Amino acid sequence: MSLTLHNGDLNKLARDRRFKRVLEVV
Picture (tube, rainbow, N blue to C red):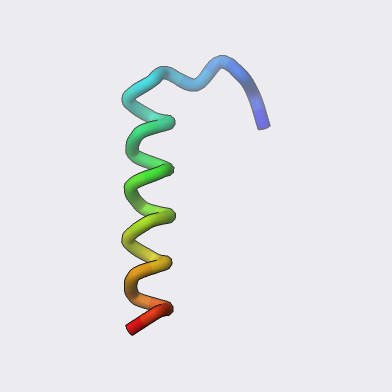
């Protein structure tokens, strides 16, 4: 992964990951 990602992008990725995790758990 490139370290040139902006904080906003990182937050979005983390949010998507958490969302997918929630969907998987449910």
